[in-house]
Image (cartoon, rainbow, N blue to C red; front, side):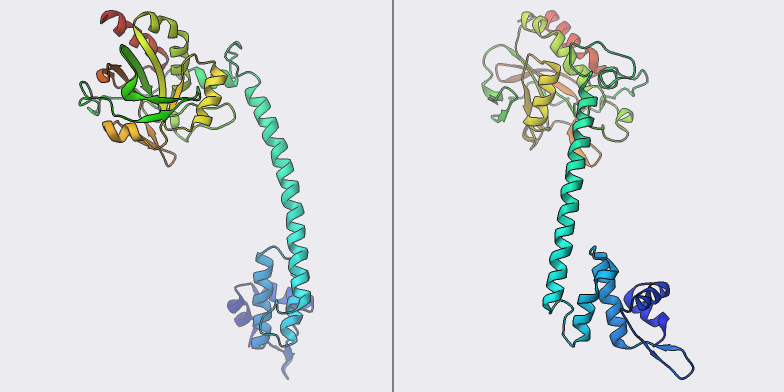
Length: 318
């Protein structure tokens, strides 16, 4: 057969076929007119070499496999030399993976050190640094509109579910006790070493989770004095993820993890999708004696929301 047919069958270029021939991996016959006449065996040898090369074995080191076929074996790896070539390739890949893992770990460490260097809550905000990126909101953030997704909530009984918090305990929402509890649901707190979802700033109500948490932190004492028995931040992030945020921002209240959206399912709370991930929309529940007394929705601006809740508590004393 002609070289073009061999290339088509093996899924390579004619130049690749010639290269394999230059290495002596195939030896086509010659016709009387001098043209090469490739056999079915040649086509199979080219195909085998290509597949092995796709697995990371250099073409030059496929010879043991091709010689195994040339000896009449049914498979290119039926010979001890082929198995040895497999082991050599695996050993080489293992060394490369270990080296890459070491480099990746070093780069991750440097990224984390650089990202967190100025991210502690008691550090001053410097223009353009990581703190500014996470806590300072753009002036042109889109304002979320009231889509009616919270109209059914006032007066509803809080579901009897238990969720883990960053204090190492379990929050039983039905059993928060007497008085008012503030449960503010938020989408996703950013981290200094992790990018926010693409287009985050353009999603109404998405940006501002860190600044919202800081506002609740800074006014936590005032909220307690105004009658809030408990304050919780709740999101669909894991407890480990939330704990990093709680420790970094020095939050005086626990964050609650609802990875399974159990509260959302029980109360039909609004959610949205960003970056292929479902997240809570920003909404705050005022729970009194196991019943939702008041709802803040939509929440805007997030960096002043704790003060909005504080004003409501003062205007509506128990």
